[in-house]
Image (cartoon, rainbow, N blue to C red):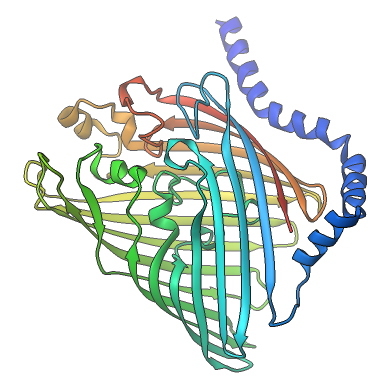
Length: 428
């Protein structure tokens, strides 16, 4: 008994210490890395190209920025972003290039192209991440109001707007209970018309709002499998939908609050010999976000309710249920170069069937495919303002946020599993 207990505890210690050990070993090369970065900047043509891209002001107020990141992921029992279970996967790559140009004093155009390789759902083919016109209707010292038209980031929670770039995320993987990677394209951006505004008060703080009419992006297999469970011969079709967010931030930045939500309406166009009819899906997420910041600490929590309604699919019964999820996260900045994160993340596909037993009895699928409980510990190393290394370990119970494309047979998945990841990132 004592031997089994000791081996179990030793195994857990190894999983937690491994990420830290890797960064400490890499830390011995910090001076060389900084010198290499300096040498890289000092080389003729390359230096000129990078400095031109970094230049903040050019003719017409043109700004160009970019980023790239590469991760290695190793899991036990289940696959994440490729065949991560057996040999580990280098299949998580993000490369982005964005530009903005102020055409007129009140009119700006912005766009970003993104190449993302992340398992079978994202092959790395470049796509338009966002691209829009921004017209400032009112611009005063304490009040700003404007209109944006084009492909826009969906204003949901604290991190959805900036989830592409590794430097703006608190960890390699965002809390999957709120920011699903398997339905990332649906959640990330939409073709939209959006009103936005900001007002400031020296006594109270800063208030922000965004509201838009959107056309959701539903043309990828990951989204179809997540919403319909199977690969159907027909196609999901976007319908007029709505989205909005209201936020508050204290003048000293210590307190942040946000309430965001959407009503996403999706239709289905059956294919030839399809077993289901032309039904409709209404998906309504509501997210409540809070954050407290000090010089070294950031405490963050978000809670989400997701309302699903399925109607008129024929052989698929009409359904109406709520999903629920939340996380608690602490980030500690040891110094400007080192930062640690600890998080507890929970997801329930159906809040009335948290353990998945009812779902399992109806479908024959594992009950643990309806929930996920994730403990995450991570470490970040800012080598220079441009280079970052990060590592993290996840201990997970359940598979509710796993991609069906990467794990097509849910019976072959494992309820209790581990995820270890290391990521290198660069920006300019």
